[in-house]
Length: 87
Picture 1 (cartoon, rainbow, N blue to C red):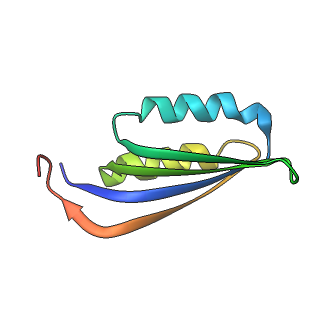
Picture 2: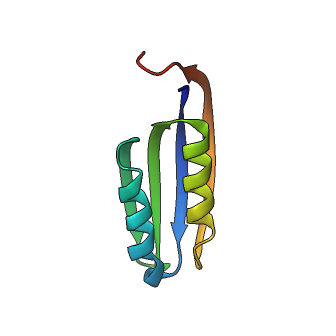
Picture 3: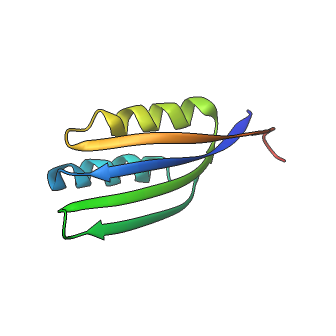
C-alpha cells in the first residue's frame, strides 16, 4: 500500500477533548513518526503537531476524526512524495 508523509496540526481549546484525542493518536501510533505538543498557557490552548507516514486514507480518516472533536481545530499538510510499501 502506498504511503505519504504528512503533518497534522492541531489546536486544542477544549481540555475535555484531550483524552479522546490521545486515544485516536494511540490507535494510529504505528504510523506516527513524531509528536510535538506546546502548551500555550497564556491563551489556555495546546498546540500539537503530528508527523505521520501512512496510507492516504489513514491520514484523512485520522484528521477527520480529530477535526470532529468539540473544541479542536485541525489542518493537514501532505508531502508530494508517495512511497510504495516496503521502500
